[in-house]
Amino acid sequence: MRAWIVLVFVTACGGGTSTPTDPHDSAQCDHIWQQNGFDHCEAGCADSATALGASGPACSATLATGSAFACVKTFEFHGVTGCCASNKPSVLFADCP
Image 1 (cartoon, one colour):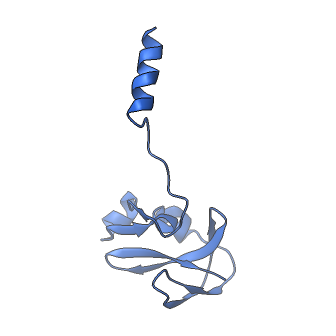
Image 2 (tube, rainbow, N blue to C red; image 1 turned 90 degrees about the vertical axis):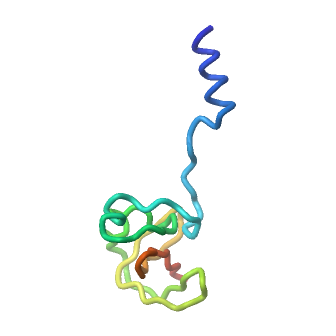
């Protein structure tokens, strides 16, 4: 019975957080980004290890603002290929076509 009450409580209170799947959604920068002065990350770039470890092919990408950005190396975030553009205090996801 106690387990049932805990389950109902957790479900009613939201139980956890969901990870954004849109690479341009706002997300908390991980501790590595934060240690380096970044405090605003788009979800596709919130994990510094993924962003800094990119190894895919280069592309001509676009930021959510519509600005062009040249990705030297790329990675995939929930099916979207791109890279990260850093401009303190932000790290933004650039989409490859």
